[in-house]
Structure formats: structure tokens, C-alpha cells
Length: 221
Image 1 (tube, rainbow, N blue to C red):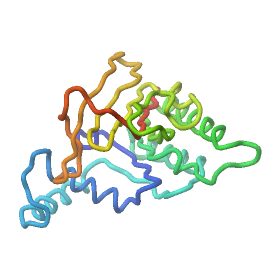
Image 2 (image 1 turned 30 degrees about the vertical axis):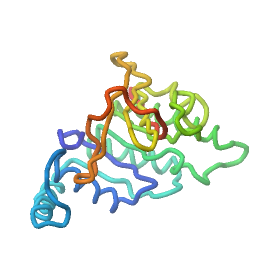
Image 3 (image 1 turned 90 degrees about the horizontal axis):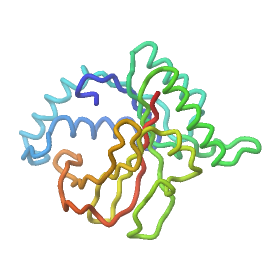
Image 4 (image 1 turned 45 degrees about the vertical axis):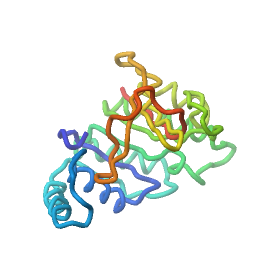
């Protein structure tokens, strides 16, 4: 990620950039297992040190929020790749970006398919990594999500090289790799949330949770 020197562009359409950067500061300043009490002087010192480093990280942010025109989003992505040599673009999330943007005879599923197709073509033509967050359909509680659970048609999972689902049953969570064109490796990784640094880390029940929501796909060249 950005902490390893990769030049990254965030497209956060649901969460404001201010809130996003606040979370990133917390995550960067306090590593997993860092025993610092929020609000303490040590905590504030860690955040201040992180803020000094944060401005030097190769991260860029789109200024769009909520429903946005796909052409304008793609233009911003193209500019970031050309001017800033961005290598990784995160779109969070597809439904929020396209909300209320349905035009003419196209329904929301057709609009989503077109957006996925254009994002995939962009990743291929510009030789960049595009990570696309897509919410799942509503399932009964306790039902494990699959590729067919991704909201919309099968287009998003067909175009993606990597599909990762965040499974949750309300108590336990795990990362579930459902598709992997690179190595073919699939499986579950139990994760836990740290309130100290607002981050997930590997751990928990090795059998994984019983399951539910959020889908993460990567569109590559």
C-alpha cells in the first residue's frame, strides 16, 4: 500500500475525505499491538509524528462525494495516473458512486455493468490496479456470502482478477478470497478489529466466522 511507496488514489464516495484521512492517520500512527490509550499524551504525540510523515506519503484523493458522473471520475483517474504516476486506485463504493445516475432506458444493473466494464478497460489500458468496493445483496443472517451474492449482475466478479469478501456473523469476521487469477489460492483468514488503531489484524478462530457483508474486487490489466 501507500506505506510501501505505492502511489495511491482514493475515490471515497460514501465517507468524506476528512473522515477518511482521520482514520488513515490513526492507522498509520499506531501499529497493531501498540498499547497507547486514546486521548493520552503518548497517543497525541504518536498522531503528531504521523501527521508530519503523512504529508509525504504518495497518496491522492478525489474530491467527489456521493453520486458522481462516471466520465468525470475516469478523467480524474486518468489525470492522476498521467501527472502523479498513480499505481493503485480505490473506488469505495460502486453503488454510492452511481446512485441516482441512471439515464434513459438503462436500469441500475445495466449502468453498473457499464461502469465495471469501463473501469476494467481503464485498468488494462493504463496498466494500473483498480480496487472496487461493491456491496452485496441482502442475505439471511448467518448465510455465507458467495460470488453470486455481489449486488447486480455477474459482470463485476467476471471482470475482476481478485474477489475478496469480508464475511461477518456480527461477532466474528474473516477475509474470504473467492477468486484469484494470479496464484489461484483461495481460502479464509480470520481477522479481529483493534479499537486502538482502527485497523483489522489477522487472528481469531482458525475455523473462521459463520458469516455476512462487504465485497472487494480488484480489476487489473
